[in-house]
Length: 454
Image (cartoon, rainbow, N blue to C red; front, side):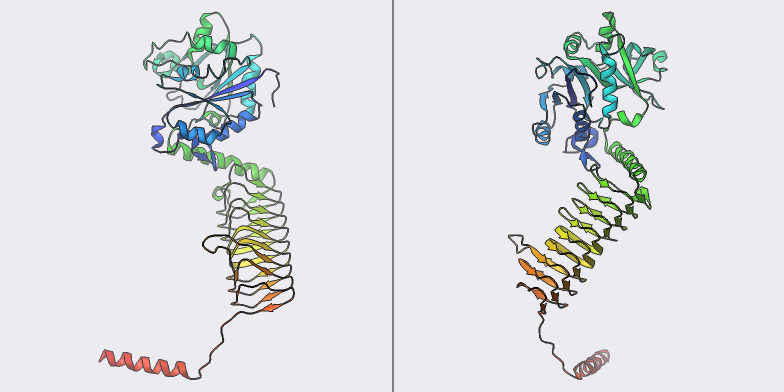
C-alpha cells in the first residue's frame, strides 16, 4: 500500500501496566470482535509492508512474547519513565535502520492504514518536517495534550497538565501517534528533559526540540475520533466493541446483506458475508465464519469456524462449531449442533441433532434426535452417511460407522456396524405387550393411595 519507497518501521508502545483493566491478561491482548487489540493494530501496519516492527514491553512481557510469536521484536522498558523514554528503548532494535518510523500505541487499535500513510506522506511533503503528529478535534478536549499550529505547522506541543488556560482553548488534540525519520528520532529523544509536572520524558517534546532547532514539524488531522480512541478500561473496551460492531453492521448491509435487527447481530473481525444473505435477530459470529450468497441464518444461532454454501439455511437456535461445512442448499434447523462435520448439498438435519466428526452425503435426511457418537472417552471417530440416506428419529450412530447411499436407519436405532447401500437397519429391543396390565396397575395404586389417606 505504500506510496513512497522509503522503508518503514513501527514502534508500538505496550509497556503500561493496564491497572484500570483489573485483569491478569495484558491490556493490549484484550479482544475486540474476537481479535486482540494489538493484532488489530498490527494488521493495519502490515498493510504498509513494514521492514521492522518493534513492540515496547514492560509488565506482562511473557504474555506479549507468546502472543506475538516472532512477528515483532520486543524491547523492554524498565523502569517506565514516560512515552519518550519508552520509544528510546527501540534504539538498539532500530540501530541500523534508515527509513521512516511510525510511533503507535498498542491500546489504540483502530488507526487505519490510510491515516498512517497520510502521516508518512506528509513527512516527505512540503517543508520537509522533522516530525509529523496525528491530531484530532474531539467534542470534549478532556485531558488531552494540545497541538498548537499555524496552518499545519506545529508551533508548540503541550500536555494538558502543563498547558496554560489560553493553550487549553485550542481544540486540536494530540493522539500521541507520530511519524519521524529514524535518523532524527533518537537524536531528538536524547535531548528531551523531564522538567514537567509528572517528572517524565514526554514523547511530544521532540516537536519542541525540533522547533527550537528551527526545523518544521507538521500535523495531520483525522476527522474520526474513534480512530484514535485509547482503550484503558473494561468500559472503554465495551465501547470500542460497540463502535466496531456498528461499523461492521453498516458495512455488511451496504454490501448486500439483510440484517433484520442489526443491533442484535455480532460479527467477528474476520466474518465474511455474501450478497443477499439474510440474518435474523440475535445471531453471533465467532471467528472463522464464511457465508456464501443467498444463505439464511435464523434467530438465536451461534456460528464459529463454519462455512456456509449458497442457499443454505441455519437455525433458529443452531450452533455451528469449528469445522462445520454446509454445502449448497443444505439446511440445519432448531437445536442442531455441528462440529467438524460436512452436510452435503441439499442434505437436511432439521431438529434436535448432533453431528460431530461426520460427513453427510448430498440429499440425506437426518431425523430429529439423531446423534453421531464420535467420542469413546479417549479418541474421536468419524461417521459417514451416504447420499440420500434416511436416518430415523432418535438414532445413535456409534462411530466409527458408515451408512451407505440410499440406506434407511429405523427410528430409535443404535447402530454400531456399517450399513450397506440401500439397506434397512433397525436395532431395537423386542416390544413386549401385556394386555390389561396398565389398568390393573392403576387400580392397585389408586386403592393404595386411598388407604394411606385414611
